[in-house]
Amino acid sequence: MSATILTYHHVADAPPGHPRRDLFISPREFNRQMDFLKQDGFHVTSLDLIKNSLTGGEPLPHHTVAITFDDGFEDIFQNAFPILRAHGFTATIFVITGTLGAAVSQGDTSECERYLSAEHLRALSAADITIGSHSTAHRRLGNIPLDEATEEIVNSRKVLEEILGRPVTWFSYPFGSFNSEVARCVRNAGYAGAVSVIRDNRVKPSQVYYLPRVMVMPDATLLRFRYYFSALYSIIHRIKNRRRWGEYA
Image (cartoon, rainbow, N blue to C red):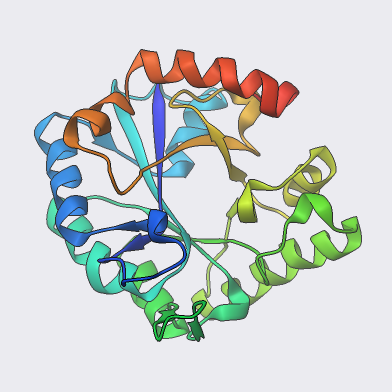
């Protein structure tokens, strides 16, 4: 099914010397990309509606897109949320419950990563932004004992549901690390689905608990941004995915 799930992390100008400048999209570029989606008639929807269509519900319109953010940085609220609201778009934000409201120093820089607080999450949820879990401590769940992975998956959901007063039904694997047992834990914990870092702009019913996404890179021109939605992108990445992801692709 042609449905593209975009992935972002920071929507902010990258601080000089930051060790992960590849995770930053400037507010100006993010606004240009949202303008592109609006002007070219893309249908921005929720992960819930994508899953509903995958499992036998109403077919989705052509050029369907979902917007997601991993890690839950504060600049999403400050910079991305006003742009989304101005365009009438929804999104899903996956947060690490162990860093809620925290400011964490980055490498040798004087900068700190600031994370969304509980108050931010309630405000975003009230504005129909979906809040999902990105685990408790952002560990590689496919590489740790299953009981520890289960705690990360289950406890993060409980924390978020206590904050929001509503069900939390979507999960994002930290670093994209998962296996069949971890995916089963996500299902058993009551999540409706999960997203991965498998690269593709097409999704299949078999992938509901590891939906592929497209990571938007900071050097993406509008021409490259358009390429993210093309059949060529899917063909190239499905070839790569067979080698890296095997049965999950």
